[in-house]
Length: 304
Image (cartoon, rainbow, N blue to C red):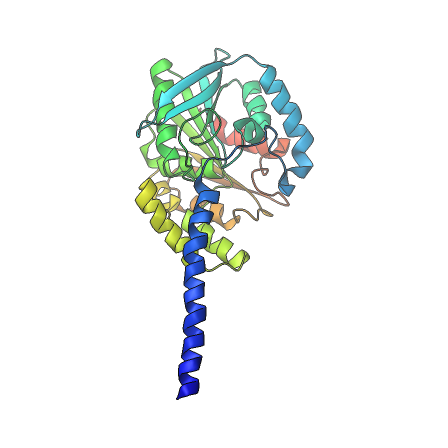
């Protein structure tokens, strides 16, 4: 019996240590994933950018040399948002929604130049908790959807332009979550390497890094309390009600957001749609090639 008590005590000790470590580590991970960060102006350190680094930086330099207007708007929760607006006097505008912890000109300089060639004005917001926009916490698309709707509302009040919305990664999630609330004038949407839900992504990362999913479950509880968002909410449920023509783009070698996410979202989407899977490309780079971007444009052209 003594050995049994000793054994139970050892098990209890390790279980207590496990749960204490989870309780300590979870807030640290929350801060790492959701709090504002100071970013390098050329945040291109991730390996998937390597084949395109020079092309991106060259395009970024050219975009920075172009004249632009500074716009601001206020989102539903009072967060003040900032954007650069490249106005070429066209009757079509593309609104780009960037990924987490990067700059809009990193994700979109190459794409922006192409849209300018195709006859568009370009609106490049800094998403909340990024750049010059307000807020201290990013929400991976859950609150950013309302920021996007605020930018669309501002653009429709300022102009009578036709609008295309283009999101990558977190930005694609924001577009998807807003897809069933898009007002008249939004003609098409591009979803580049979007995900189904943050909970799904966290399950994937818990397996990839051998981390206990309990930590991510607790983190979702923190998000519910602090941010009033639910990481279980999925893009699918909104895409099922969407009427906005949609093109989904994803690289087959994406290890940040698996390509099956776009396949699932594509199947869920109720609007006219197209799926473009790009062999060998990683996260946020699937639409970098001229061939893929032309496929995207040919789809958009049918509805703009």
